[in-house]
Length: 431
Image 1: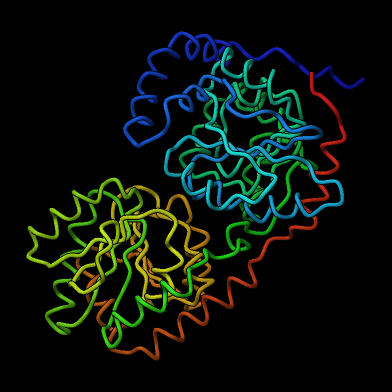
Image 2: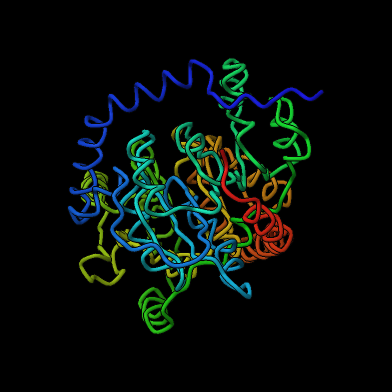
């Protein structure tokens, strides 16, 4: 006889639930201060406590949760596919950051709603579920929150799953609680075959794990206003240029030093600097001044006429990728974990990055092995790599063409995924 499924969480998970509930007021106060400082309306900060600020649409509803910009944008092909069905469900997308909320306000299609994610506490999630009543929960990449999973009144899917070596090691050491939590997933779709094997080794039944396509590679690249793009191209005509995208504190000084080295060989070169968090623009401007570099700022309406153009606005990456044949992706000279290369790859950019790629190593390895990217650059090797490509635009163009071709090959198996989600939505509420 098959053993009955144990429905009560193991003691460590119950302790986690009690502790997070006790800590919720302090956690919410800190989160609220951060959101308010980033311009979020006060009423919307209560969404983190599970209070809805929009009505629930009638009919089935799919809840998709991602940590921030990268994870939620990777879900856009999935959202488009769900909404293209004959009887489309409503889509609720949650995330935790002000930046993701601002970007999604522009990028989500009609039929999709954004809310800030509830804190991982019983009271917040009870309020959230009482209002939204999801028919399916889709978690993106590595967003594994115990209370969110345990309290879900519907099947739970982990999509585009990405578990780092550190995460896998932690799950192995957790033992029974990790196995119990994994057993709550109706389906886990991994980015790689190795990822699927890793999840099976943690104890999840083989029929609930499969390898899928890469959703980030399948996403439509960010758009750009044609008139604005033409104006910027005219201003920059004849100037060699490169883009430093999604940069973080701790690596930006090295990027500016690399540009000084580039300028020593080509005084007309322009660095377009697009930090991951535009609210850090003042810090970057100060670094540029300390490095004796002239700078213009997009947020002030200034044209890119200086040695560095600071792209300190949201949702304009489509412009900067199209203007820059060479792109260095940040979050990689410091141990942030790297960032998604596929938007630049889809637009035919020659791609470069640093050695810290825990979040997206498989993506970059595929591009590197296809001679479409250069990885593992350091403070010392970044400038020479940029200089070589600037001085050999034919080689840079060929790298970009290979990147575009590899992006097409990586497109996700959206139809199979949508069929899986439709099937799971019909299984009904979970105990």
